[in-house]
Length: 440
View 1 (tube, helix red, strand yellow):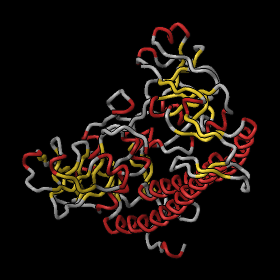
View 2 (cartoon, one colour):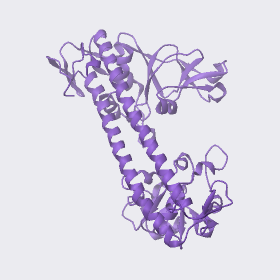
View 3 (cartoon, helix red, strand yellow):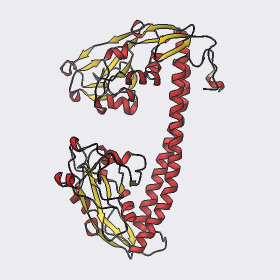
View 4 (cartoon, rainbow, N blue to C red):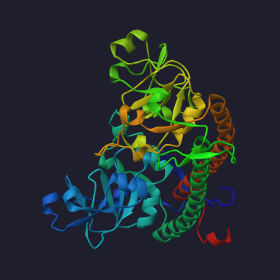
């Protein structure tokens, strides 16, 4: 924040999480300047065909609500009749917050939201205050639930707390500044996210070209007989995955067997694919079992170099593949492929470029089974050529991955700067009165 000046005079607040604020800011409780809105509506009271629905998933994904069929509203909601700030009482660290306003259709929000109307303060400033890192930490310290996925805070902890506010005019100036600056940052982040998308598209195109056409552009080609494979090198053999290896699903993993990290055999869950260091090879794990426990759970022990991936749910659609580095077990949301006579990296890359979303079983939850995977066609080059393709793709994808990592790091920096800017503005660390954002 070195480019922004601070206020001249500060005072102590007596608030543990907000120690010093500008001297002219007023120390007050938020329920003196806001209204906690409670206006429940049941599905049978909604007579229109559509509603505008601020659901938790919609706000987390898009920052706003979406139009839904009224018949899909399955539980009591809150009716939105005035512009307000919505703050989720569920998992406060995620800061699921937005500004809601009534639409032409009946407008509702999840009962997990606390709706706050600005009475004697600026609504947009209230949004930034509630979205600040300071407030996230305050609410995180008050969570009541013990499970990680369903941590909640009491409504009163959200809408009623001590803070310090500048005048409404100054609030509007701060909110206006944050609107402009966060919009600039968000635009930069969007450009970088698009850059990552293009790099990933380049990576998939590179992999697909290599594993289906080979590295020699002048090699004679033949029709594979498979529409999506098209032509393949004449000397390659078109088989099915079951001809070069086998797929195997995982086993149930009871909660009371989880949490041990020092047993002999890693027991991987889908979430382990997200651990740092597990981007290609599964080197880190949160759970492990003994051979005796694996036998008791009827969990097959997959051998080193098995390629694993999610076989059910939203994780399947992410099309992530990993290679285990030692004999391991996997849970029943995953599947493994092992080969005895093909190059592991070549198999990994062929599986990597497959879009399993196109193979999923119909139904609410996407899934694939071992039979489907086993019957996927595969064009198999000679063993030496497999290794050449695998080595080539390791080298080239590593370059692309490093570029993606670099762009991701810059996105993290921008996001941290964005959060810091909001924090410094709403806690009075920087003086934005009369600040011309366009002069920066």
